Length: 286
Image 1: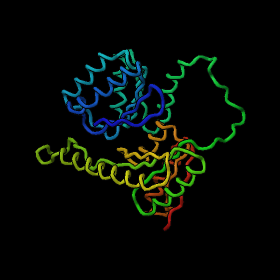
Image 2: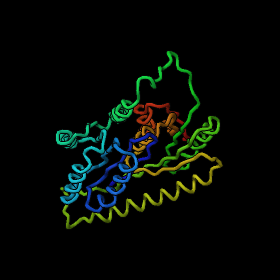
Image 3: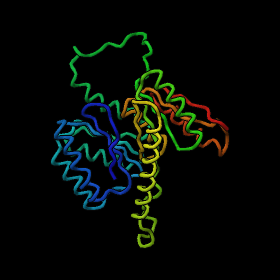
Image 4: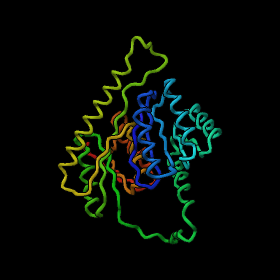
């Protein structure tokens, strides 16, 4: 499945790729991609592989055919994943195309974004370059992201994020992550497991989350608010969205507990450790 990730930058687009890609996935995705190429000219593309299981045979051919036909329509393609075979796949793509293709492991997601932006920056003349001041004066936050899990305690993090957004006149993005419940593996008997049922279940969970997020967003008295339901783990979804949208503050809740009860806290710590923007960790009630 292909899912576009919202991006704020010109000529850079991001897509999360999950599961095993089918011919139907390409039938839905490629027209959208062709429209972006037609409207924007050569583009750079971020492909985030999340539990990616490869292609069905016909889908693999569609991928190869599209790549050959649009070889000159991409400036750079960054592929972010976890597996060595995914890195090998990117290397093969780089060898057989004029497009610059690079693979980055998940922990180097920010480096992937820097590499794509570097390609865009090369189009800016040195006369337009801006010299950074030696001492940077802190600027008001422009875009604040709050990570939500629909728990009652998450309201505390949301209230703090809303307070900060009002104080700074910032865009406020509410983000919730939905993890896929199942991916077909070669260890399973295909006659015993119908992967379509799990895909349908995932979509139902995603749709319910979308409805909850819209209801929550509509209930807040704030004009400049967005809401997104993203596929993936909470950490990966939040970090990816923050990079794509150039968020400058992430607000996340943490119980500050130990042992099993520390699971939510570990997500907050992972985000704080990986994010390049400021992270505000809100201590939630015990």
